[in-house]
Image (cartoon, rainbow, N blue to C red; front, side, top):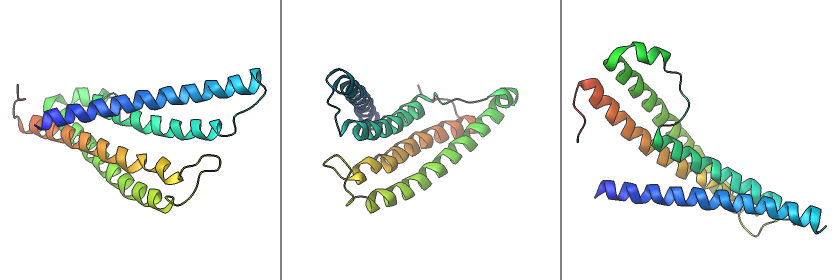
Length: 162
């Protein structure tokens, strides 16, 4: 049940990232066309593109956390052996969980505080823009929990499940 739910959540995040990035690209292209070719700039497109960029960045953070594709310097970790490397991965996962918890807490607070603030040129609340912060932090925290579990099992010498 849980792996199926995780796969569905991964598909939702991947689809959302594609849709948001495509919308951002379309918004910027429309702004260029309207401003330079039609001489009628779109008032709202700059703000929308900025907000879509924020969402695309946080969705990309979720995808990178799931794939474990963030940049890392592993010179020390590779010299520690399997148990030392597992301990380093466990420490890194614990740090990621702590950071995600702090970001989720403060992200929820800032989203709540801005829920009644209207965007300058869009008919929407700024709280929607900030809502991605706690959502992404929770998702990354869950991925870090899974990484911590794998690292702990590796540290304890428990073989990976097939």
